[in-house]
Length: 365
Image (cartoon, rainbow, N blue to C red; front, side, top):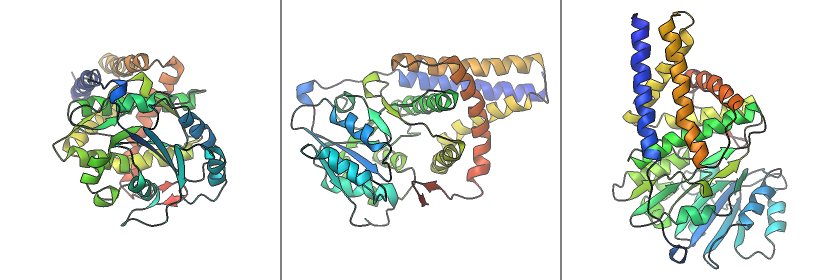
């Protein structure tokens, strides 16, 4: 074998082992509460200039199934300059479980969405906090499902988000979401926090307060992951990420490459805050994808087989999760995802490392 083939084989072997470990972690089952044991809950949605999406979101929230008197929904109008606030006000009129606030103060050094969330959490009455985004549609059983996992010392429960997949551009993003969340699920269920997504996550309010709230942890544009790590670092609570179809949320895909670029850069900047294990996982995946691209310069039958094996491994890693979540994965979308996955993973360090400027919701961080 050539040196290149050996490097490719070693990187791909480690990549394969990682995915097997993540699959084992994602398959773990957890005990659940009965309906009459469910705690009180608060759903928080921070919205800024979402007039074209917010109505679908709050309409789905209005259909949530939860024991009477145990659920409140706080909608944060984060100083929108469009009709977001007006749409919310009209919709929640005579709906007592809803309330809308506009952040009136900057809490500590918090900015943007994190400050909006922190303002809402100061008045939230639920024992469990659940967050989603204004471009999301929730499952009617979403709150009931996530809250049912708060047994014993569980302090954080993550949920899965997919995206609309009407075409290959949206479909590749949907597969990417579930691929990343399966890695996050498998790793967290085995005790290693790698990622979290703020449009589908939950945590105990008392533990949020214990870490000092968002104002008590370093500011990050990936505030969701930062909070998860802070809870995990307490070393006294359990954080879990069950693969559960009734907790799935559907979000809007990025409409164009420009918005997709800024989403990936924001996530990439947040990823630089990972620990050593996180960097090792990213490294082997990076080498495996780089080897696939370089194969055209070092072509051999062995390298071709290794490329086919890499794609096959990806398929059988993510397809079972689609099945468990009752979602359909189209082959054309998977093919687009494989190309997209290689390109953005290889490009991300060159996008993130020169500067950490991120544009998000009309603000620059």
